Image (cartoon, rainbow, N blue to C red; front, side, top):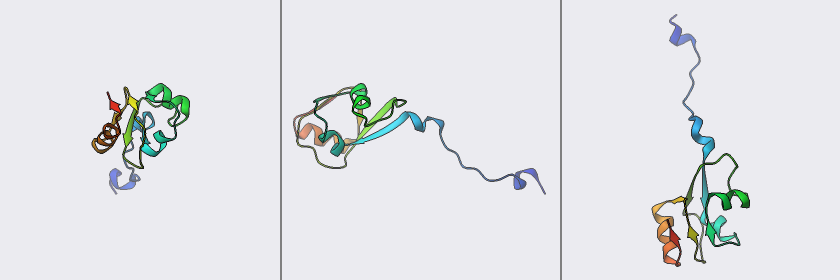
Length: 89
């Protein structure tokens, strides 16, 4: 039997997954501060210490204006943040 048939099948799992994280709008609503960046999300415990890239996803509601720096957001989350008077840079 050929070698490729004897070896177990394994999928691909990116090694960079541990450096990416997602934060919901509902989680941002619970925060007490208005200026949001990577360091503040780590201090609040919303993302792990190894995380380098954070994306805000549109899950939940947002009622206060937030100033977001250095964190990316989905298109729908960005529209919702800007609709309540916040900014995404």
